[in-house]
Length: 224
Image 1: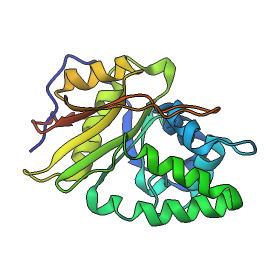
Image 2 (image 1 turned 135 degrees about the horizontal axis):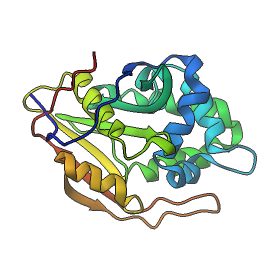
Image 3 (image 1 turned 120 degrees about the vertical axis):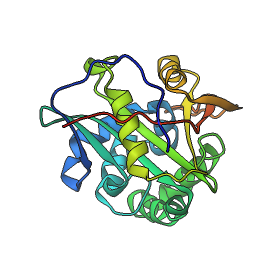
């Protein structure tokens, strides 16, 4: 069993979680984008379309990395205040086809540049390998950060993954996001590799990223 290291975190009385639906797009896409705005903009923004334009389109589709069916929301008093994703290597194998199709359909003749930047970025922000489970696209509304909601979201995603004893949780965090890295370290994640990047264009960049892994125990929260 995987359990996050226990921390002294105040619990919210009305926290709940559920799978996303397409109608969540306006609430969830800004949270997904906030998990890596510079990298998303590097890949998906061009002269006519923004990264959030594409993420909104991709979110409404099914089967991709950015799709509604690959995300969960965190609700506080029935309002969406957080979102995240968890997936294993088997599920990730289907992303290339789904996301590639979405990119081609959305960008048309401009899709080649987007596909190229996406493939380059995957060398730094990687999909899970065999026996790995990725936690990704974590976002909490800015005004509610630092209150333990991120920890509860990560714990829920770990539980929802039904990870086996031999599986390891992994995530990638930008060196430009030290607060997130500090949180993950407090929860028991450890840096296993630093992926360096010099990727940059007019719209964004991909910073160096820390690959972090966790194979300890997960605390169960009573959210009833």
